[in-house]
Image (cartoon, rainbow, N blue to C red; front, side, top):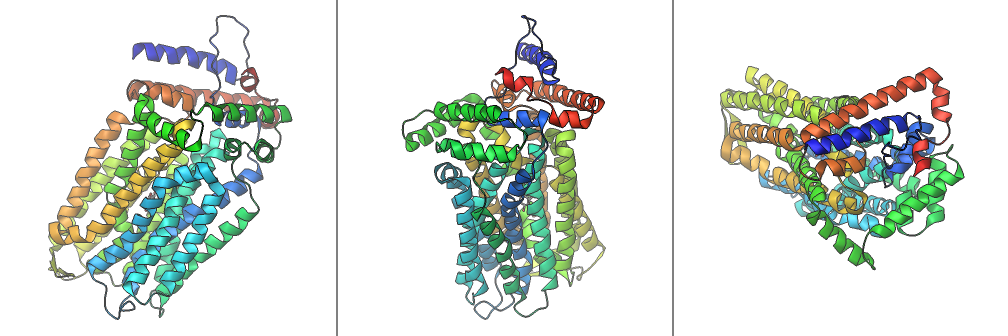
Length: 562
Ligand SMILES: O[C@H]1[C@H](O)[C@@H](O)[C@H](O)[C@@H](O)[C@H]1O
């Protein structure tokens, strides 16, 4: 450990000198190699350029998938309440509600397993456009459903689209984003996601009393899908994908549009690097390469540790129970005595959105690890209070009906709602947002497969929770259910404390170094702190020389040296 820290130290010192532009010719200085993957593009932009409108447009269009993820998983809470007897002429049982809800998670799970590989084979953009078609088919089936099974089939097909979008949208963004704002741009996807859930709840409340309102609610999901599909007809794929396909000219065109002030030779150099990296993935055929990446992710220790962290965080995100509230909050609030339960759900979804915004500002400044370590104990505390409140409400289940012994709306009902809101805030601040930064854990060669595994873990968790939550309420009581989630939050806290290093501001190469022989929490914190100080020093220097200078300065020495 000590030797690793001293290795870091010599690199920091050198790095600080190089990055601040103070190029040194002293022979004894160790030269830090720029990160040898697509990050190099970002390095170049970090020091020389503004974010171009082209990148903003691409991010905006790609993150519509995040919106659809949120909207499609969000509307079901109110739809389940307002469907009434519209399917098969009878009220849905808890089991049927679970199937309708879980069908989307199941669909998403299936496609997320293959989406990473599909994106490498056919491209990110075509996969996202294909997901648009699935959204349309799924929505049309639901809108026209009069039978339970047609509704469930529509939800499943919609889930296929959600699974593809949930993986590829953050991947797409991370491949086009300049490094200095990549963390934040990825959180933008989460903002769209939680915003989509909020809007779904809002529309659900507005359409609550409208005849067939839930059909309109589903129909509205067609709007963003059509917008994304249309926009993508005119937009390119990511440069990295084009390089993988050997379409270097296209890659170069996208880079030039993305980094408008970058000189041609720099773009060319970047293309060469990406191309060399592409060939570095072993295997003569596509299938051989895929097989090799599967082997590599399990056998290279740093990759395997990254995989453990990626999958664990996504699993924790789901098994701490948040989506049971997302999917069933309407049903829960109805049970504790609120007549306009959908409107109450909006407050919960709104809290999720607002605190994702807080995470947006905190994730790079305070760090991923810190917000996780604040969020998880907060969730645990709120869940314990919630479990206690449910105990005093004394809810019994008779068949599929919940009967509250203390008679509907009460002070304990308010405690339940307040604790759920507090829980939502802590959730969104940390574990709701951080796992979607998953692509930074993996080096380029195994990023597709690594993010596929992690995303599939997310959807497996979502599936288990969606299909068992109401049954859990019935069998182990609401108190038991929320106490169970509280215990899982506590165990998750211990996992993050011991196994999740601080990755804010680190180069991807450094992430691999950190994970090479352990989880190296201490070294990661030292390194992240150092990076933060360097950034602050750069900003101060830039201010000193004028912002214009900062943005328009010549290509960085760092990049030209490689
Ligand atoms: O990050 C998101 C977000 O927290 C959503 O609110 C939740 O429903 C999703 O499952 C999760 O992946």
